[in-house]
Image 1 (cartoon, helix red, strand yellow):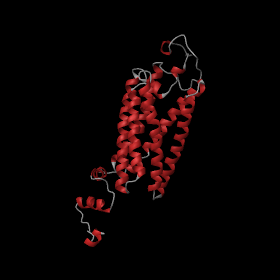
Image 2 (tube, rainbow, N blue to C red; image 1 turned 120 degrees about the vertical axis):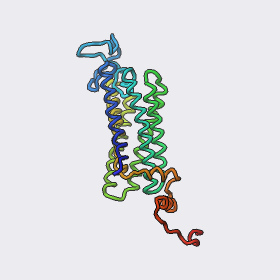
Image 3 (cartoon, helix red, strand yellow; image 1 turned 180 degrees about the vertical axis):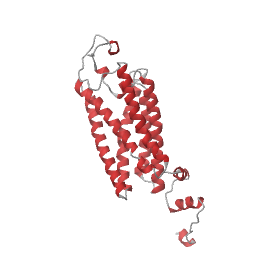
Image 4 (tube, rainbow, N blue to C red; image 1 turned 60 degrees about the vertical axis):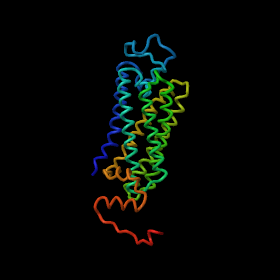
Length: 272
């Protein structure tokens, strides 16, 4: 078994744990209100971090959106670190997934589109983490506008690609799992967007909860690539570096480089 499977397992472990740590830090410093708080006010006499007592006065500025949790220091520093590390891990996973499909099967439009959307999503994630919503709102929302739709498109493409390449019962079971996660992610993303633009305090809070659920589902989806990464080897990247094993001749060159003889077709067949 290849140790590459650790990479997709590490991504959800790092990011999901990391954003919850950010939330706990923001809650401890009274920068956001608890997730179980559904009562909000138009305004408060004191800022949230200056208040004390069992009951806190919360406004919409204190809704526990993931971005809000990582807005103020010290949690903003940790939030940037998590987003930056997560984006590079996403790029690595997407690249290895792309190379693995080429090595084991052949390249296709779904595979190339998955590579593009995955890397675009990673770029948006870097912007989200390094441009806090209260300090650089436009750039933060640009990053969110890039990362959320492209992450949704990525899981859709990968679900379709999994079905297209599936041959065994285990591969079909993985395709069914990814399809279910994709449908859940789509529902939560739509609800997040619809509730976010509403003026109701309750719906704004519900939007924050659905945002958390969406991000967790997406990270867990990346974790499912551990199923394929158990067969990823050093040859996977080597094949891609040589232009991709797009045909039998390419695959033959790979075998020859490993020391094995390969039969050559007759000259007449080569001409055809």
